[in-house]
Amino acid sequence: MKTEAAILVNTKQPLEIVNLEIPILNEGQILVEILSTGICGTQMAEIDGLKGEDKWLPHCLGHEAVAKVIDIGPYNSKFQKDDKVIISWIKGSGVDAGGCSYIWKDKTVNAGAVTTFQRYSVISENRATKINISDEMNNILPMLGCASLTGMGAVNNVLDAKEGQSIGIFGFGGIGLNALLMARSLKLYPIIVFDTSEKRRALAKEAGADLVVNPSENHQILAFKERFPAGIDFMLEATGNVSVLENTLEYIKNLSGKLVVVGNAPANSMVKISPHQFNLGKSILGTWGGNSNPDRDVEKYAAILLKNRDLLANFLGETFKLYEINMAIDQMRARTIGRPIIGF
Image (tube, rainbow, N blue to C red):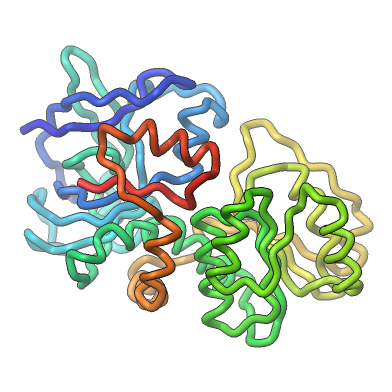
């Protein structure tokens, strides 16, 4: 059996659409039909060579999707055929079966425990979570595999935010949107979004941001600091920009302010921060996927997304076909869309 796939052959080059020979399933693996998949900043970093030397080329990509189980490997008791699942890079219950490799012509194409830029994919069973959703939701919910678990989890699990607390979100891509939706669900106030993209600021306002700020405009930053002279409770950094990370500690309160870092900075980046910020009682927190557990959190986060389906349709925009994936990547790089979705 073969599958069409978009693979990375060389960094800083467009993905290539190829046909891969699917391997026989091993213990703890499932074969799924990808129904829709999102493009994440992590894949952009891999494509652009920002994560350092890539020793696995050529390889498959993608780590968030809605899919359907079509075959099951030996000794698998977690799923049945035709189960609809959310595919995620974050581990849930089940066997951690590791990655696999496909054959393309006479070449081996590497793949991790989860890849989604292809019609059919071999997945480790602990990277899939069963979900009951209608087909009309297929193109809205792939973010549950990454952006939702990370963005919503960062607010709910890592910051442990409570009603009435204030939050700033730096970067309004998929993670920023999900962080905002969780903040709104928890009744945080005010919710402030910082983004240099005019379109993304407009989307943030539509999504319920109480204030949007263009950080490239100094007068808007000064106005923010004048409005909140004591700072705000929380900041969430989702840009991967080191200079942003270095400056955001100035925006949070003394004694209790918390900054959670979600964005992926380029390989070998270093951050320079004055220790005085910590003497003021401020904290920097890291997170691995929002400290989310797919088995516990997917259904809860899905309910929040489904309440905002009209907003999501506008944020995600048109659904691309696999052969249009490089166009989608270019639009994401230009930040003219929130999060591209590839539909099969």
